[in-house]
Image (tube, rainbow, N blue to C red; front, side, top):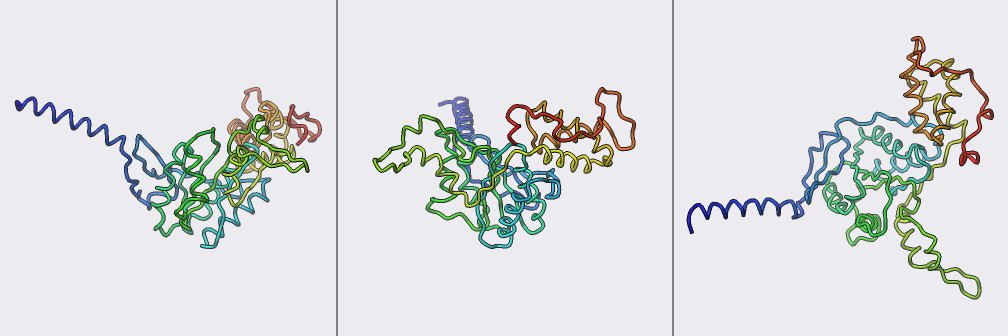
Length: 319
């Protein structure tokens, strides 16, 4: 074999090995734990790593309004966790834009000085959750693994991994890790009418759920703490608008005059959520700076109207 042929074979072998390295699972290495208090789990091929979050959301508990009951329950659970006392994994479900994710961010900002850390994991990467748990098991900090907008389709691999970590794996999760998840679905999986065929009725009227339905609820019930969020009423929505406008520096007169535009803004979107209120406040604050003349852009602040003078869109009149 000539030298040139050997060199060609070696080059091809090196390229093949380089490709194989992307397919072979790599051990998860520790990040610089002093770089941030929040991390995102990233994955490329078979390699995964924790990426420090350089710019954290600055939201606080005072910024989140009209969910005091939910706030108190999450705050109490997080306080127990940070203090080293028993605490539960948390599933927050319900109406969109009501502050579920914001409460988790507020928890991090409140408790980071006491050692709380956050790792955000996408549902597609939950299969690597055992490796993450092992990585932080010996750390002195307290870690929240955060899964935002969590839901699964039938057969997704992350479903089984999360289910095992929550309760059922042979190895126990360290006491310095909790999982906080948000979802618009209470049971995290789609439910179909045909699944009612799995029910069996006995002569005495007792109903026995089919195994398919049991599987649907088996994941969500492994979260020790359920916190439900509900659509806001009109008055609650306007209170959130007022809070954000005050945050942006508008005075009382401007806030009162913004009620009607805020209601129209919500009607156009078919939702009176906290997210919609925040978006309206940002738009209004950007158009009408405190102390400046209103911009001639067709958006005019109207006098205050009563709450019952605006008809809600279809689907909101029951709130």
